Length: 352
Image (cartoon, rainbow, N blue to C red; front, side, top):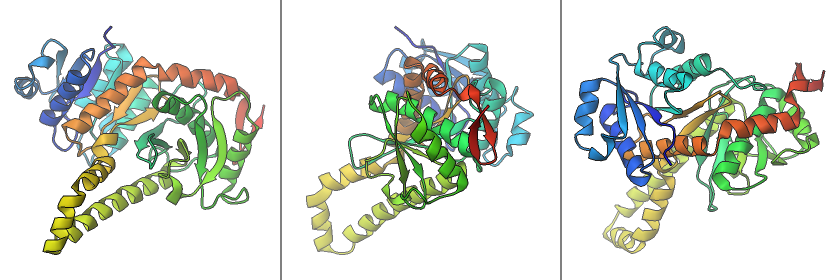
C-alpha cells in the first residue's frame, strides 16, 4: 500500500536540486511505497532524475523558479509564499495534493509559511521544532523546542511535552516515554516560574501517555535515561548547537591525534572499527529530519548541509509520521489532558 505523496522543496538547502532528488531517490530505494511531488525548476529536476530511473514513475514535478534565500527574513518570504518552491510545497499539503512537505531551506521562513498555511492544531498555541539526537543507549532522544519559539510560558511547555511524547511513542515504541524539562539543576526548587508551573502541571496530570520525571541538565541529554527533553526555543537551540559543536570537536581531536605520529597511525588502523562506529553515531545525517509539531499537517526540516543520505532520512521521518498519524495522536493526548479547559495566568496555568 502506498503512502500519500511527499512534497519535496527541491530548491532548498546548500546543495539544491541534485542532493534533494538524490535523497528522495535513496529513500524510495529503501521504501518503494514512497511517491513524490518535486517542487522547483523543472529542467534541473528532470536532469537530476536522469540519474535515478526509480523516481520517474513515482514523481510529479511542479515547476517553480523562485527560491527562498537562506538569509531571507521570514516576513519577506511570506510575501512570496505562492511563488517559491518552499511555499508551493507547503501549500500542496494544505490542498491535500501531498501528505507531507520536506525542505532544507530557511528554517524561519519554513516555520512562518507552515504556520500560516496549515495553522496550529486545536489546543496548541504554538508549533515547536523537534529533532532526534543520539544517546548512549539504543534509542534516540527527542528534544523540543529547538528555535521556533524563543520565549515560552508554562502552557507552551506542557503542550510541547504532550507533542514530544506522542512523537516519541512512534520513534521508540514506548507506551509512556520519559519526559523531562531542561533546567539548570534537577532539584524541584530550581528554574524559572514557567518551568516550575509546567512541572507542577505535568506532575498532576493523569491519563497521559507519558512519564514526567522532573528536570534534566544539559550534560545529561544524551545519556539515554530520558526520551523527551522539553525547553523553550532559545535554550533548546543553544543546547543543540553546543552538542553538535562538542561532537565535531571530539571527532576533529581524534583525527589530529591519530595523525600526530607513526605510532598513532598504527593505533588508528587497529581501532578503526571503533572510530568508524563513533563517526557513524555522531554523523548528523543519520539523525536528520526535524519536525514542526502542532500543525494541521506534517512538515519536516532537513539540515541545509545534509547529504543525500541525510535527505533520505528526513523523507523517511515524514513518511513514518504520516503512517503513524502523529496529528491524531497529539489531538487525543490533548483531549485527555483537557487543554480546552486551561488558560494562561501569568507564568502559571489555572482552570477556567
